[in-house]
Image 1 (cartoon, rainbow, N blue to C red):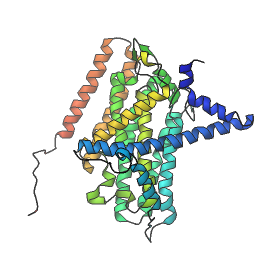
Image 2: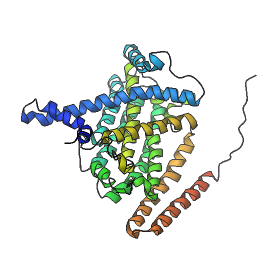
Image 3: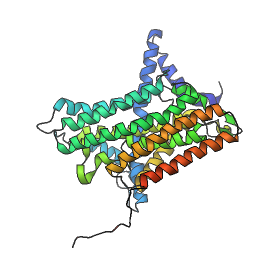
Length: 393
């Protein structure tokens, strides 16, 4: 095995080396435990770094200072936050359902971690290579709605309950376009396996990759998937469950200490998980962006793409204002849903029209026309005018 191949498979080789110290009948179990430990260690570590980078990025966008006191350049801020979360008092309302109140953040974090099991992080680096990996990911992701409702209902707080109902309505509404935008990938690949989806995008034409995002239906599906993913993970501009002006902190208003930290961790891990899934479906997974860059380890490309997705989410948070609830629901059912359904038709037409420039022109024209028409319908009754600012006297 060459040096580049060894570097590409270094974690796989390390897993097999450690498992080799155990009896043969126990090695599969030990290998699985090592893979789980790797996931549980890597992504919370990325979460810690992301919290600093996000604060610094938002500070730069908003022309203010980010964390700069704890450690060099403020990079020990996550350590301080972790210590604070562990030592803060855990306050539970007297009338709350104690068991459900405790289980809600645990259910959220466990469900999010399970989603990483089917993500191909690199070549031969997937915890569970299921034939129905895509179906498993969405099934596990749907259980996060249960944890949100558990948190809001068990708190015995009207703000928490209303925040939970708002969050569940938002997540259900955007889960439909999220699923439909991913269905085009299943249509083209003919498989629900995340590994096979990545392998289907592994070829090159010249030095350019065969990523699905470089097709009209793939680009539209990717944009729709990312928008729905932002809503599913409560990221700006869809962070309505945490509307401070009307619902305090939403469904986790009554959470403090380590339980709140678990919600915070679960939200970011959910963002990493769904961003990694978008990379798997549309951006070639761990594949290199150019044929001449194939020497870079496959897991390196996955994490570089994930870093780019995180930067995009931070940028959007710093630049887009929060939507109103009616705008959010209208956008889901009157724009996102029709566009994803039309994209299914366009993907089918692309598949059966054969090679040539004609299918590029027709598919692109149909999607562009639908985008313009649906946008005009949504904006028809909007009364937009200049903002006026009033100050208290």
